[in-house]
Length: 207
Image (cartoon, rainbow, N blue to C red):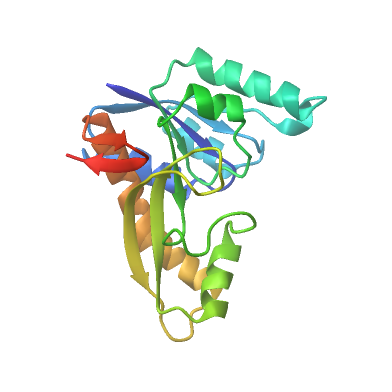
């Protein structure tokens, strides 16, 4: 059984997609051990509690320094003994010591087809604003492992989404969620849970 922690900062729509996929048998061999948010007002925490999943808030604002936050965040995460950490809209820089300790055991969902519209400054609506401003015809979402860079880790799955005439960033964001994020994030978790994902020489292989 794959034990996962889901880290969130906002509404938790991807968390909901994961919980629904577990309930529906789309994700197998998996249980959510804890949901962690840096934001005490995140609706994702409510979603978790309604689903009977333990939910905690660890906010950098409650610590004297970022180092103190990083240490306690890692300590609390370790206490749940999870196999995989899922970043589902988590707007906190992951400490390097955590990346090192959980090498190829942290995944992230990004709302573009990496390497387009990713890296520093590209998060949330800014990704979709960037895609629309550039005039691309196709965007999408990517699930990747987390390394020390920003959106630079090995890519697990991608799914394309067409941009339509008259799209606003908000409309495009919703379509990318519905058509890509909510599908490939659960699929990636299921593949990992069933031992089908390996990383060899920095590239993902799916069996």
